[in-house]
Length: 156
Image 1 (cartoon, helix red, strand yellow):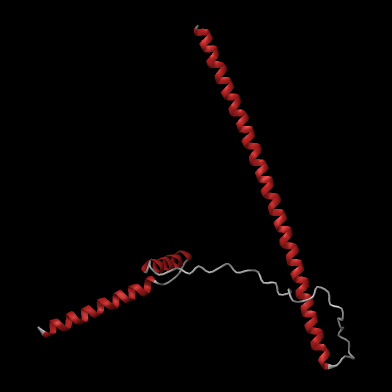
Image 2 (cartoon, rainbow, N blue to C red):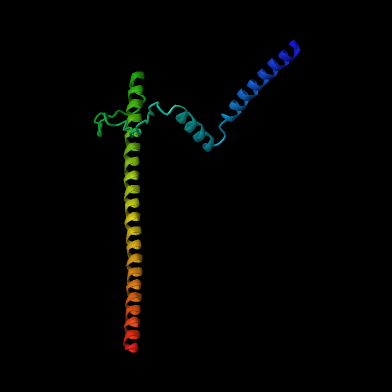
């Protein structure tokens, strides 16, 4: 009798271990779908808990404090002291960053303008198609009216 209880005890432990192993196996994230499923399960496990939705990150503009025009830009000349090179390097890095930012802004504006042009073009094309189909529909309606009127006049 005691051996049976020991076996049952061991078997029970094995079952709980298998269940925990299955749970661990289930939590392996291989695809984006698995990740989404796991997040949904976590959300739905406690529906009373408030959900925190993070705000969208704003684009950083690292050159907001940097002036757009630097007057005393030093060159990297051989006669400069050892401290001057670090100042020059810092100013050069700032200037490169500013130029890169300006180029990125102009590229973004150009992409936005292109996108707006594309949207307007697509809307125009869609309106032309609908106008054409509307005209065709009205023509067909008029023809059917005329046919209907002709058939009425022929009957009378």
